Image 1 (cartoon, each protein chain N blue to C red):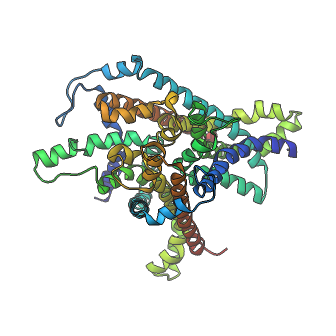
Image 2: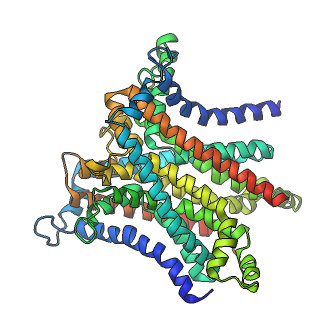
Image 3: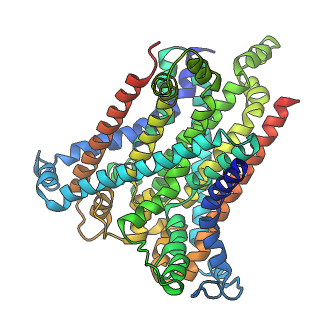
Amino acid sequence: MKRIHLILFLSPMVVFLLMFIIYPYIYIIIHAFMDDFTGRFTLRYVKNLFEKWAFTNAWRNSLMFSSLSTGIAAIFGSIIGWISTKFDDRKRGIISSLFSIPMTLSGLVVAFAFIVLLGRNGIFNIIFRDFLKLFHFDLYSWTGLAITYAFFNIPLFSLTMIAAFRNLNTSLVEAARNLGANIFQVWRYVIIPVLAPSFLAATSIVFAGMMGAFGTALALTGMAKNLLSIQIYSHVSESNYNIPQADALALLLGVTTATILLVLNTLERRLRIKE
Amino acid sequence: MREKILKIIFWLAVLYVIVPIMMPIIYSFSEAWTGLIPKGFTLDWYKIIFSNPNYQPSLILSLFVASSATLLNIVLTVPAAYAVNRLRGKLAIFLEDTFKILPLIFPPLIVGLGLLQAFTSPPLAISGTTTAVIIAHALLGLPFMFRNVYASLKTIDERTLSEAASSLGANLWQRMRYVIIPNIIPGILSGSLLVFAISFGEFEVTSMVAGFGSQTLPLILFQEMRNNFRIASAITAILVYVSLTAFMIIVYIGSKVQKGYKV
């Protein structure tokens, strides 16, 4: 293929990404440090991030909620990945197909479904609160949000882990056992190095996704839960309209996510088998 | 015993996905749902969405936006995937990773925030227009489209096919038209369906970049979740139908392709 053709084929995509992802992001970074009226350099918006309680609190909440959600997804996703090795091909295929549905679903659809299931007058509460008089489940709490977001994250994590466990060659494990490796050594030197890249990749995707997610939370709890993403949204659309502040918050979100992804990436390289 | 436990776990996993997505569908056909079991059967909520001037334009707009975002994705991604498949070395790996991951690292929230403010003045004053919504949706769908098309190119061994075609005298255009495109159509279709489904239900970016003239169905749904839960149920159900249809066609295409290779 001629060089000119290659460039011709690649350039629309490259230009599109540069124009609509890279340029806007640079714009955000610049405007986080720019006074809205005078156009001069200012550290006011960035300072606010560390001084205003609402922002530091949002940052902490976002970190904790994203970690919690990623943890839930990691535990159940790994369990499902492991169990899937015991399924026949047909069952594994069905699970893989079904688990790719939530990925395409709107956050609002999931919010609606969980209001009907777990909401104040949802099916769950009618059974457990009204009929059995046992307890009341509050969907509009952190626990409620975590359970709702798990509907996206557990299937997403499972899909990666199902593929990872398939790649785990059982004869390799048996060979290690035959050579006298104990169960700890098998995990440390055989199983974890094979699974780690997928596990950490899934962790990264779920965590990054959760840091930016706000649709479902907005639909369930409005602005009541103080998350970084909700803060950004509210500075763009609601009464406290303040775009440069939103830019500074976006910068904080970007830096936080990038740092965590970098740590996960380094961890992956450590765990991987040296070639 | 072990078989039984496995069976139970399998069905739990199936129900975990099926039960929540059935809820809006059941809700949308019922006249009232106050107790444990919904009452009555009605198509009224659908009728309102398909005919009422408050809702129908949003439905049309969402279809338009999703189709445009899909088309834009095909135009951008298919040539790019072809070129990346042709390249070798570090550049190829870099581009592959970029196209697969870049739009995923930047969450919809940040893409929306950026698009909202970076394009307010001519020559590209698209902020608040339907164009901005289409571009944002195309960005979100890009990695999914690229993965599908690129995977197809890899499985058909495009290089060998192209070499055979060019030894028979086919030029680049003829190779594309008669050899490559027909062979990667399953990948393009699966990618397109994913992009369409994602765009049709997208709320986050849309809520940030859309203006008054570009109120898509999910934006209306967000309002109706507070105002009229019945209407909301029907809109939610429509979004579920779009996702499910896309997903079933993708599974169908996948099974066809697999059978084709076995023959």
